[in-house]
Image (cartoon, rainbow, N blue to C red; front, side):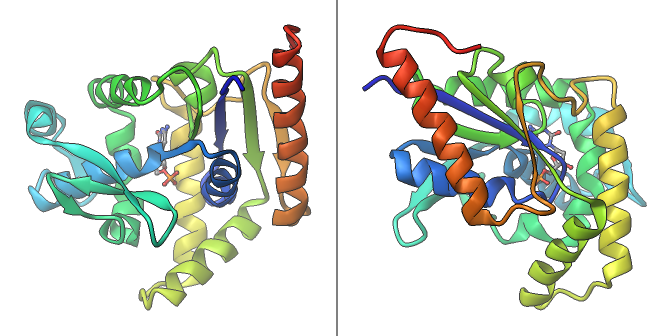
Length: 237
Ligand code: DC
């Protein structure tokens, strides 16, 4: 059976990665969390002291790009791939508030985007991939057969994210998380290079009201429709 490319974009904390992992597992596809790559570069910049008081020294970071090696390695126990920065698993270290508060500065830098987009494109071997992020359906895989765009109210997203951070024993308040969600929405949507926009051919999911189960079912129906039509040689636009 032909394997398709599935691009999932949307605002932060809309549950993109949870649904993307589930879909990839069901289909036996590779799942790639492109946000983890921007987060890992941010972690590198923080550890190198290239970010102070939210100010990024762009030139220093760019001149180090060839020293930043990112790799996803599949974790059999978890059922998905984890990100490694220069050979070290940083999956947990990249999810802190400190990284969240600084990642937008890194991800608005065109040189960094160019390099990461190139690496993301190389991961796609003729389909069989689910990638989530902000520019997957518009820039990374504009040819993706299925594009989804996830959204939800900022309060619902902040509440979910706050819960996750509390479960990881991180010392944060709900207001900090909400402010971070709003700030990232603004920067992600207004940056010059590859802003977060909905691809023309994306299907929108507002998961403020949909449960994970409902989303999963709707997405699998879309996947089946695409696969069915492709096997029959048609094209759904
Ligand atoms: O998906 P996430 O929240 O973990 O992503 C972290 C940040 O990385 C997000 O605020 C914007 C940026 N990002 C991006 O610019 N392009 C992508 N394809 C993925 C993430």
